[in-house]
Length: 61
Image (tube, rainbow, N blue to C red):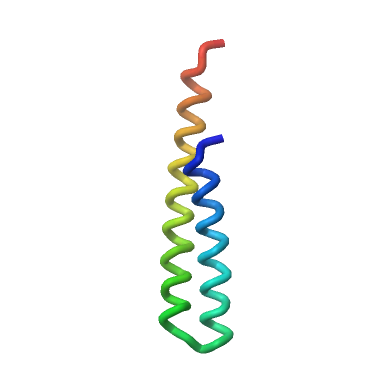
């Protein structure tokens, strides 16, 4: 499992929580930051998944 996959998942979750807090409190800045962090986490998660796929495909059997 690639470290980008793990870090991306954590960042995505943190961003979701931050966005929800922003919505509840009416803080649009926190909401926007959370949304951006969630999107960055999704991208990092995808990169980690691709790395895992490539690593598995090139692993000698």
